[in-house]
Length: 329
Image (cartoon, rainbow, N blue to C red):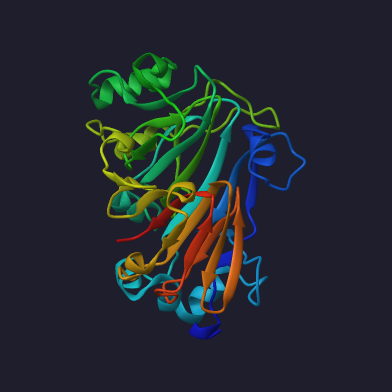
C-alpha cells in the first residue's frame, strides 16, 4: 500500500449478540443480521480479536491492523502517532439497549496500563432513540465513600444510590473513566470511546447469561477504578454551534461534532484536515456522496467511513445526511 492508493475506507460491522440487545440495529440502521438480540455493532475497532476489516475498494479484505503496519502515519496522522502510537486509538459502536445494561465502571489509563497493559476507557454517548421513560445511570445520587459503596455493591442495594438521568434524542454525554454508569432499557445510541474493552461490572439485575449462569461481577476491582468525585458532562448544552455543525464532545482522547448536511448542503473538510488527524464519519440518517481526488464514495444511514489523515484537503460531502464526526485534536 502506498499513500496515493488510500481512499475513504468502509469496514464490515462486527455484530455482538447480548442478553440485553434488540433488533433496532437491523430495522433502523441497516445492520445485516437475522438475530433479534444484537446489542452492539462495532463499526471501527482496533481491539484485539475484534479487528475491523475493510469492505470497499482495492483494500477490501485487509484488516485495520495490516494497513496501520504498512503506514500508520498516512492513516492516523503524524501527531496522532506521536501521542498514541501505532494502534488505532478509537472504537466506534452503535448500541441498542432493549434491556438495561449492567452498571459498570472503566479504569483510567494509569490503572488500565498497570493491570491490563491497555488504554483506559473514556467514552461519549450520542442518543439516537429512546423510549419515553428511558434513563441513563450517571454516577451516584449522594456522596459515597469506599466502605459504603462496597457494602451496597456486595449486598445488592447499589440501585438505591444510583443517579438516573432522563434523555432525549440528540443529547450527548461525556463519560470519563472512573464514572459509574449504565445505558438504560429503551435507548439506542452511538458510542465513541478509547480503544479498550475493559469493563468492571458492578451490578447486573441478577440476570443469567445464555447458559443460565450469573454474569460475573468485578466489585473488588471496581473500587480502585471508581472516581467518587467524577461527574458526567452533558455536552449538548455546553458547546457552541454554527449552521449545521455542532461540537458535542471534547477531551484529550477525541473531539466529536454533529454535521447536518440538510442545513449546509456541502461540507468541506479542508480546515479540519490541518489538524493532522484521521476523521471518522458515522452516518445516522440520510445519504451523502463523498468526493475526493480519486473519485466518489457513497455513505448511507448506518454506515461509518474512515478518512485517512493523508487525504488532506480533498474530501467534500454533499447530500442530506446527518453524521457524527470524530477526530483527535
